[in-house]
Length: 336
Image 1: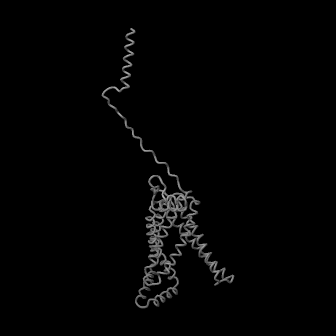
Image 2 (image 1 turned 90 degrees about the horizontal axis):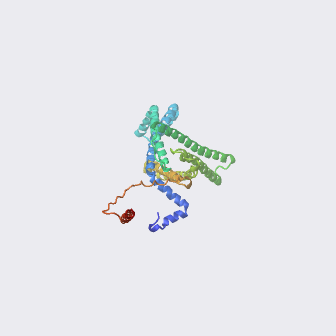
Image 3 (image 1 turned 45 degrees about the vertical axis):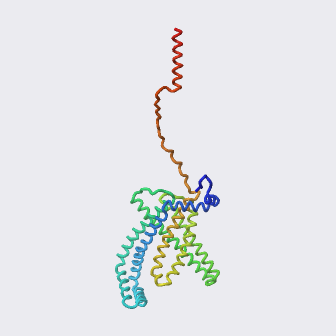
């Protein structure tokens, strides 16, 4: 903002001299104006809500697996009885047996709850991304919008599976190659393997975020506009994952941390990822090449105000005109 008297403020001067800093300020302004924190809270809510049906589906799948393999079920019960002796261990085993017997119901309820929470998550995420691009929320047909959100949810799930699959396969293949060449356990080789794994994860994350930034907003966005933002999002997301890993390993060392640390960690991580993704979207949308020139403001409405002047006598100009007309008429009558 310019100071009084038209002089340039120090902040304006710094922003003009450093375009990257000016870009960050524009992104922060867009993030704040488009209620980025509120959208991130909604996305976080549905992210945490989705954990319960996902656990239900996991229990249902485990129930089908254990029901088809009695030996594995007996080993699980023996392990529970050994780890938790007494009546509590018997109670846990009864819960496991009940879960296996009702695996079908748990699976169906989990799928229904996952569909509801997943659609809510995707709808809020798409609205949030659209808002950060500066597009107003429009009224859309309910069924058509829900169908598009459902297809986008499935597409994002497949993209995440492919991303994590590439990372896991690449890491496993690299370890296998180290064993083949006899470099298993060598320090520099394992360091290169770690760097290569991180690089592969970055590439996979970049592809996912490129798709998220370009295709999830409800208004069309070009691939070229999202390339830089996807790269920044991939690096930031990998950093957040490393920080979350360190956090969980530190808080789970105590009994209280083991009980509440993961829950708090999931909440904080989900909110940080949501806010980070929305800020990156605002940063991408406020790049110079993506800014849309605002139309000039409309002129104010014209106001017609007729002026009526009431005079008690003729104006000086009118008086002179009347005298001249009288002299002219007098001269004409004299000639006659």
